[in-house]
Every structure is written in C-alpha cells, then in structure tokens.
Image (cartoon, rainbow, N blue to C red):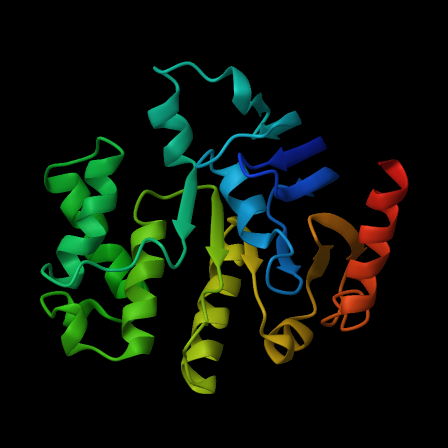
Length: 247
C-alpha cells in the first residue's frame, strides 16, 4: 500500500511564486526516497505539503490512505503522530537539554507521563547519545545535535520520516552516521523521505531518487545515483520555456 500519493499537486504562494507544479507520484510504505534539485527547486515545499505545514493550491495528497485535505480537527493530532519531521526550521532549543528537546515532541502530540519519558530515553539510546541526555545543545558536537534532532523526529514513533537536509553542516563522518541511522530506521519499516544536496551520499546509498527543477518533477529513478544532469540549470530553462509557452 502507498504511504504517500500526490495527484496533480501544485502550490502557488501569495507572491505568485510557484513552489511545486502538478506533481504526481506514489511512494510505497517502507520506501527510502531522496528528493534532490538545486536551491529553490521545491524540495522543502514538497516535504511541508506532506506534513501539512503548508496546504496545496490544487491537486490532492493522500497520506496513509487518507486525503489530508479532509482531515478534521479531531483527526489532526493522530495525523501528526504519523509523521516525524527533521528540518532546519525546527532546531534544538538552546535553553533545554537534549532530553527536554526530545520530550517536547511528545508533548506537542499530546503524549506525556512516564511512558513518554521512557520513550525519550529509549530513542536517545538508539541514536547513540543516551549518555548525553542531560547535556545542552551548546555542549555537544554538531553530529550529536543532528542525532538529537533525529531522535526528536522519531520519538513519536512515526510511520513516515521527513528529513530536510539532515546532513547539512556536518563533517563527512557525522553525515555518514546520520545516513546509516536513517537506513536502519527504514529497515525497521519507516518510510524515509530525505531532501538532500549531498551528491556523494545520495550516490552511495543507491535509493530511489526524485529530481525537482523549479517545482517540476524531471526525473524519478530507482537504485539511482545523484542525477547531476537532471538537477542542472538546463532543466530549469526547459521548465521556464514550457511555462512561457502556456502564457
């Protein structure tokens, strides 16, 4: 069964900028997918549409068998528990320990108490930073902070993980560690979708690679390397030419 279905999905922002345009694709449960493309290609927009941080202008998005545009207020907390989010906008809070940062994710989805705290301890241990639980973000390395952000995304035990540039600003060893953790989570059944600029890691991993250019899906390949040609400025020009012919 599909975890995610996009059917002719477009997002146009208030300033007229096109975030994504008529995206149609399916991602099966348990898949690991990279979203690549130049800056401004629509990678972050795509992830935010899945998590309902922003809403589509047109088209339909199905997540775990549900049209997310039809979710009721009562259903939203349960929907949010299905999706773990790791993205730059949601950095760690400097005035809270790693444990407290991760626990906040539990509270945000209306989960608290001893069971929630046990889950926080468990996920920090899984990420290899259990002994750093009481440390503050400024007291740990960037790699450990990235692990804490991943732990926070996974604390709610989601079926889908959205990671926006999870290896940004990390050295090669720390970046590889994060990728290995993502792959292990995927082996456990989590559907993993990663937006990334890291050509080397994408090529090493050999997963499904979807390439965006100015919000259009220009390539979708399985067991693929980073498609430099599809992510090139030439594709952007082609998309712009197509749009100009429609005007």
